[in-house]
View 1 (cartoon, rainbow, N blue to C red):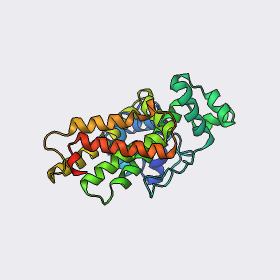
View 2: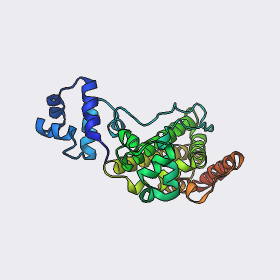
View 3: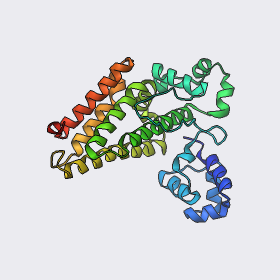
View 4: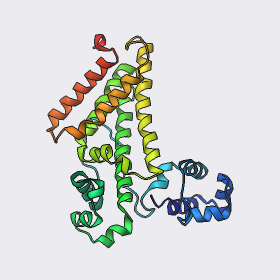
Length: 274
């Protein structure tokens, strides 16, 4: 589990909220609030959300590995079809490679340290466990993916937005394959509350596609009826790409993404519209 208690304490101080004030805000005693901040009481998903609301910060801020070493954040893509290298510290880069090769359970902090050319003690200063590393990578992948989906759909009419989002989802899993593979295969290794929060975030991606498909259907561009099964199948199809596709060249990856967008349009009955 992440060191969320330390993050709560740091963000509370930054927000100018007293321990007593935060305790009152989420409906617990001062003693319980102190125990939360000192890592002696676990945090549920609901309580994390309550704390984030009281401090007026995103829940993700409470799940960063350490306040002094937050996960790297790249600027949101201006062109969702372009994939410049991510800015990763050596530890996270090594973690991706070790997780991809050996899986989460097979990876050790010693192997990751060796790949990063850093001492094991140096890793533990910023990432106290493999779980912290996994959370940092998952948050990084999800942030990059959501930013691309936003850019792909921005300003487009529903049919184009739907096709663009499917293309962006596929491109991400091709171009960011090592990182996407970690996201696809190691989700079950996340501990609570991170697992539930990520599942909820992924469900929101599926819901956005479904909402866009429904708008297109209302305009007569997609077939009538329930589109939820088709949308779920499309998302599953895209998420599975890194599990079966080896590294491909740039042109082949873009061709596959366009093909998946076409398949998705067929699945929602939009073949006649293309």
